[in-house]
Image 1: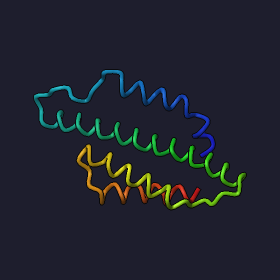
Image 2: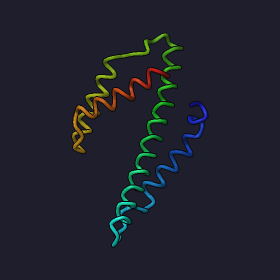
Image 3: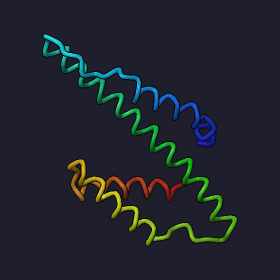
Image 4: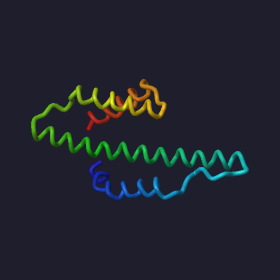
Length: 116
């Protein structure tokens, strides 16, 4: 994971370029299979961005873990997790994601963070 952290600036530039480049997978097509293919490419691109962002988050988690170890702080701070969860449930509602889904997603990310 350390090598991934070193590549963060380049990764951030790639993500920003792809988001703001104006190239969208919304091009119209006469063929149903072409249209479906474009939607699938868009999903694939979004999935790559999600994974990259979670990877970037894990790099920050490693830095926090190092800081906590150096300062003899507990790894798990339940109040902090609860605050993150509640904030993200609120954000999820703004894009019509259920609180159950956000809870499962953030719990999975948190569980992976604790493995680091």
